[in-house]
Amino acid sequence: MSEPAARAPSRWLVISAFAAIYLIWGSAYLAIRFAIESVPPLLMAGMRFLFAGLLLYPWARFRGAPRPTRANWRVAVIVGGLMMGGNGAVTWAEQWIPSGLAALLIATVPLWMVLLTWLRGGDRPSLATASGLALGLVGIVLLVGPSDLFSGTHVDVLGALAVLVGALAWAAGSLHARNSPARAAPATLGTSMEMLCGGVLLLGAGLVTGDGARLHLQAVSLRSGLAFGFLVVFGSIVAFTAYSWLLRATTAARASTYAYVNPVVAVILGWALAGEPISPMTVVAAAFIVTAVALIVMQQNRAAAAKRVTAPAALVELRPTR
Image (cartoon, rainbow, N blue to C red; front, side, top):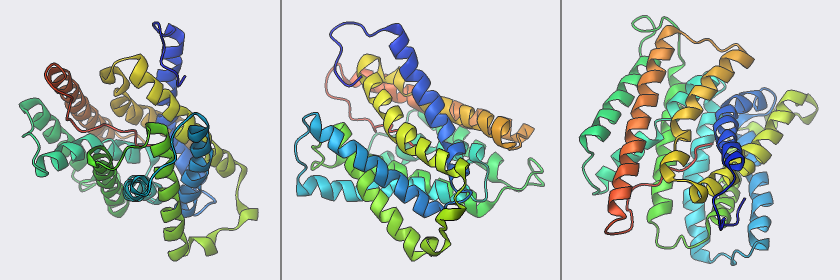
């Protein structure tokens, strides 16, 4: 799927690629929950990205990617630390919060990216974007606000805050990756480098915090092992390849729909396969957040299309968050 198509791609190939990014990335949150049932969270996240990077890096080089420079590696350390560290925060938080709730909170990445871009001197958010930011804030408050005031269901505030910090870190890493003049590595090679660097940093964090002492290989369950393998092969390689291909085979507007489909898939799978509760307030909050993300993404795509008429688009890159 990595070679540019000389003619219109097969309809079924496009459908398969969309199914991959919708279902695989949407189910990654539940897979994380299963994986950390018997594997300490930071070690699991570190090994996941390290293994994925070790598989993806030689594949990218074999396909002709040039040897990365020191500047490429320097950017990969920063970007990988922020983005994979953000995913590590999600993994750590899922010890206490449902996978569906984590998916809804991580869906706020586009909101953070808009705010960070504005703070860095970018364009002031449009009315549609500002409306999306407001709706997203309301959704967050509904999800993690006082339980007796909203849903009546207790939400671990520390876990929810960890996911929000992870979303902020992922957004900052995405912006740094886009804006760094030293990031000249091809997309697949650059992603593999970020996974390698982020994986090493997460492993180090896990060892420092005592995850190594809590890892007992004989106690790792089959479900955790299968979930880990799913995250490495499908969540980090197959879905990313499908997404990269879709960016060339279809429009960015269509490819970016994963941003507001994945949380819905995650909530449904968490309820169906793990018995995670879905309260009426969760449904309301999800509607606010998904609508907010849809507004922001559609506005960014319209603005990018308009800018391409006169100059290359300078909007933030909406990168995958699995």
